[in-house]
Image 1: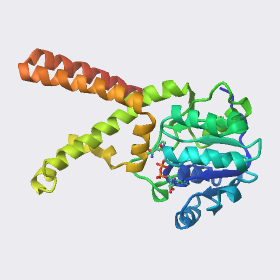
Image 2: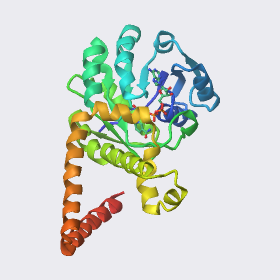
Image 3: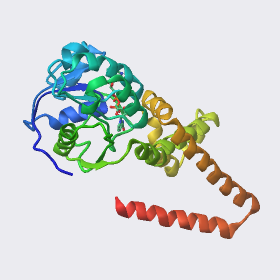
Image 4: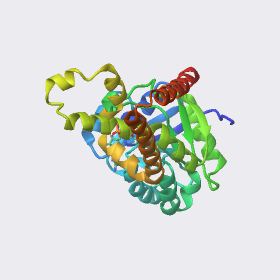
Length: 294
Ligand code: NAD
């Protein structure tokens, strides 16, 4: 994958929260972006993002923000993106590169194709595989993307100039690039990220239903529970949107997982010690390989 030297005049970040704010912070001081403008709905949040150095200036008017932009990064929750596409089409110049950071890709691509009109060929769908269970500008940090993968899911229409510029943007902040189809992205992420979040949220809900108010129960939530439930602190709006935007793939993985739970339940019911041991040993071996790779 080629990397063009990266330099742009006006970068606009739509949604200056954890991901948008971290990107702005990481680019600040590189001297590669002349000005970074934030767009959002809350003047207070945007003012705070400027105070933290994530953006140079901001606007709550999309037209003002994106006029003359060379690149627009959309880092809002997924379901806000279609309306943003419809408006962007009206205001950006025909060379403006548009990209996003959304955690599911197929529906974003479909929305872009139907709403961005002629500038769809400048759209490079993306997803940084970096994040936190925290959200908002206060959680943003300039190192967030260093050493992490960013997946781009260009389509047939995507022009090479746009793709190379977005590759250069992410390379500048220390990320490693991968490309794949949006279908493949959604299949893989449903299993590696979206299903684990559903499992974490459901475990915490189960504990809560079974008396988390009872201090003995919560005090005795062991280290394993704490580890596996950490991601259940993630933003509810973001996860609502990911579940709905990747629903087919996620439902498929949830059904597969239910079968796996059923297998464990039946072995436990049968008292099949040997088969349980084999299942744990196989999983332990698979887990150690994941650990080695990271
Ligand atoms: P966040 O809540 O920290 O930030 C989102 C920002 O978008 C907020 O400032 C919010 O006010 C703003 N916003 C919401 N609706 C808007 C609208 N209609 N117009 C303009 N601004 C709007 O969320 P985040 O964690 O930065 O996630 C942003 C995107 O990145 C999501 O699509 C998410 O799927 C994706 N993503 C998140 C992570 C993660 O771990 N948090 C990782 C990779 C990708």
